[in-house]
Length: 114
Length: 116
Picture 1 (cartoon, rainbow over the protein chains, first blue to last red):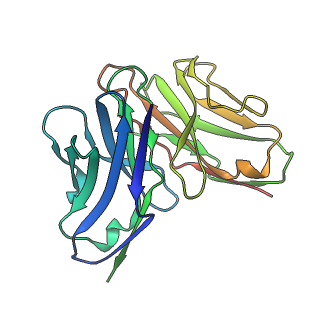
Picture 2 (cartoon, rainbow over the protein chains, first blue to last red; picture 1 turned 180 degrees about the vertical axis):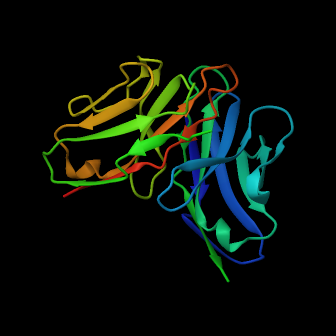
């Protein structure tokens, strides 16, 4: 069984400020972890993923995430927010073996103020 | 490369009516998924196909929902009769069936269903 908790349904930052979106997971087997972004009236787009190897993962649009096994976390960061980053962000976990269907978190809405 | 196509983009119906959604996956993607995304929640898997066979439909409310992928390419999801709680965005996704790539799903824009 696996689950994802995204802390904070809304995160508000100023343009140019650090973005930090939190994700904690639980999984009975080594996880694969994902961050997706969803712009209004669009489907989900993969930002980045962790499978094995390097725990710091870089994705598109300047985002990165770090897998911390001891903290069961996979927080998403970006050094400097841009207005175009305003969207819904979903963290997801899937098992490294067996069923690979991801379990999604409830999402965090990122609001960027000018 | 064309993405996952879905239609219609929006649909408004009254409860007890029926509705159908269509999805055309990325060319060559053997695996196709239908997700339900209720407002304020993450997507939840309804059904997974590999080619024209069902892999997982354990979360599909089979008394009212049905899905098919007859020729292993495009797919249709139907709800009959619809209930108020079916109001959601229905997302279609596809992926390659190759080991290591099956977890990378590509999503369509979704169909927003409103049941009145």
